[in-house]
Length: 381
Image (tube, rainbow, N blue to C red; front, side, top):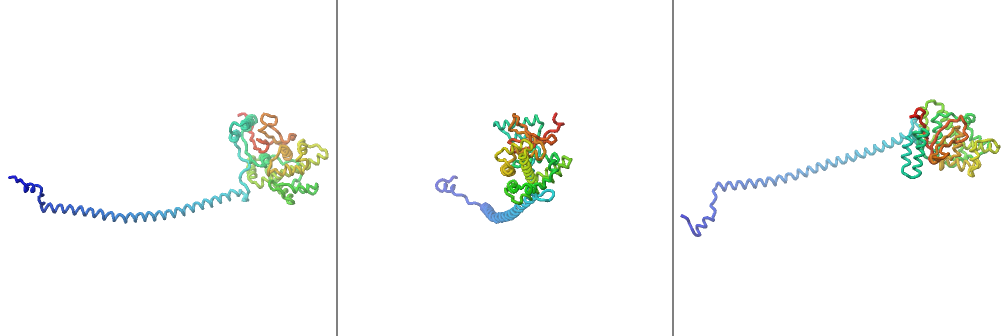
């Protein structure tokens, strides 16, 4: 029998009470869920101290590592500075244990002439094209395949000449064998009264005063010693080694050039006296004394000789004098005179037939390089 009315509806809307077993089960699930939440909460609170401890340890390790890295880099930097200082000291000490003022060679190793030209004279400017053609002419016609670049300063001409003389083992000049060149400064002072020689300049050193005679003697001693020793060697390899030692010692090198300058002055004084006595002399002496700036030995020294090694180089007339003093025939390729009769010249022009020849190449009649002439065996290749 079905119940109707309010009581029947009420019976359907009301939940029937749960059994004790179901109530116990529900309570158990609730307790498990609550305990799980409590465990998660307690776990997160336990992990926070662990993470902070890990960060502290990591920070401490990094600080220690950073300290040791800083110390290591500082030590390496100081070691690098120390090694650099040692290297600098070592580079300034030659094999014989004496200090030298400069270790760099003033005459460099051979380089291919056309490569040297191509590197220096680039572009299509008129001068660059002319210089390339001039180098090609020297390369092809005169069998010159390589060149020794010479340090570009106001000693350039004397350096190039003396290197060639020493490297070839050219004998000591005859007139220097007959004359004790070490006594020439005193001879000029006491015999000829040339006390104005005290104004002789040693490169950038303008005035030496009464010390000039002692300094000139030391220069002449080095000049005579080095030339005498190197010309006695018959071994080209040994001469090259000796040249390398000489032309990497700036102090010794400069003494050689100042000795040559003084010998130039000595022969100018001698030539001046011979001209007054109407003796025959090489033509370049007349050209030298015709200049307003070198009408006598004193003006020659002050205006042309003293600036050598300081502000200017050796001019063409002085190149004749250099060849005359050293008794060598100086052949020069003047590249700016390409396609003219002045392209190849000799200093002096009236050289003697028994003088040995050295060869130079110049781009401006001021700075000279040393061309290397191919051997006869290679000319046909």
